[in-house]
Length: 286
Image (cartoon, rainbow, N blue to C red; front, side):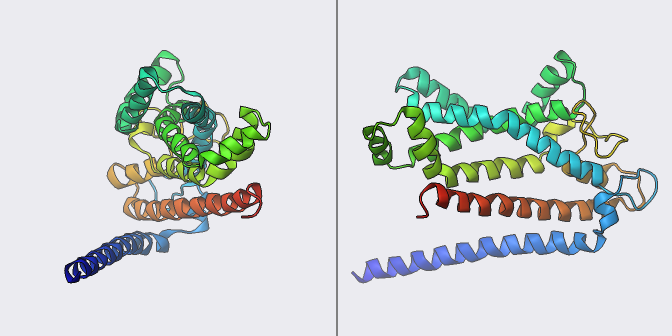
């Protein structure tokens, strides 16, 4: 009995220490990046155009391209990824083909993003003739997001108690009605988590977009033409810290890093809070 209590106390202390370490690392990470970058962020920096040879350039076009590519990639990947996840969770039968599909999805989710970038450069940039463009970057990014969306959707649907599904069918609902009115609302928190993860990954992606979206921006700002080159904020951060000739390149890199962290945090909150409210409404306020 004493041994069990001692073991429990040791485990409790260990997990508390690990939790504190994780929080401390995250706090140090945020303090370091925000502390170095926030003093260099201004309205002219956020909305201005970049400058290659003179100081004082902004990141307005890159910021616009980041969200433009993100929303285009989600528009391509969400219907396919969520639909495939629902199929695997509800419609697919247990057989070798289904297991092969699941193994393939898991294997694709572990492929490095640069491999997707090279594939996108071959398929979209070269064979389809899209060249370095926002559309080529968004299509390649959607391929990167698909395996994660499929897996997250399937797991979210399967986490819903089977009694929900059975009760809905027993009341005369069709499969589609049960999916739309029962399974999706009940699994919405898991789905939103998956979408948030792929969105944050897309905002910070660089290796993939180097080969597909390019390292330049349109002269027009904002430019909604998906066939122009679309350097993103993350790409501009990498370029400013490694190859830029601007006199204040290091300051631009620090400010870009801080701005990117702020955007990811705010974006996550803007998705998470409304989704919780919507989920409560769809589930009857429980």
